[in-house]
Image (cartoon, rainbow over all chains, first blue to last red; front, top):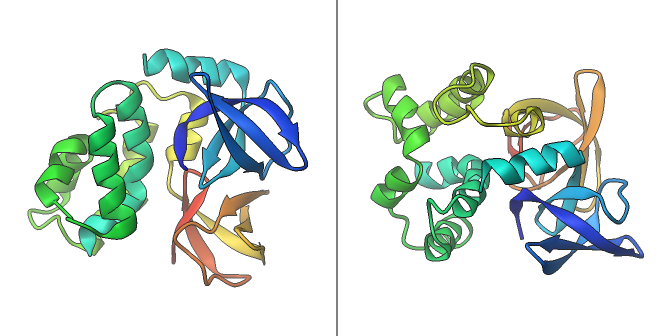
Length: 64
Length: 151
């Protein structure tokens, strides 16, 4: 699972997170420190970068 | 195979094209089949989908379907285009530009699925991605938080 588009962390449990993409939840492991409500970039089932909210919103706007 | 080498770097861009409606899910699946399964590698299809990268590639060399030319594009020209906000990179945010730039990192430690690499003054975690055999002090090229090849 690779997504160059940020996803929103909706839950975290034992080092794994559920990340929402347009409402569809995908499970991934966390390579970065992040909390519920953070946006992350997911590559190969790992959240590899935390994306600042402002940046995530700009990216969503750009790909509309 | 130069097409696969090209796709290793170009693949993240396909997610944006899908979101913008420039490609469909079937085309994304075809890209992934070529990249991950090496099935039905279709040069014309790649040229049509990634036309933004092919244009500057053609400027580098007429014989652009070879590893050295593609390497020159992604290691040098691609970063220059990002920095000058031209040829398809106009709308990237600062965060995207940092991720999109191909940069070098020195491997500091090797973990199960990722490397800790030193990039200038910073240390970052990058997925092993296409590089499974790097050792401490090896230099890797990184794109979208993933190691793509060793130097």
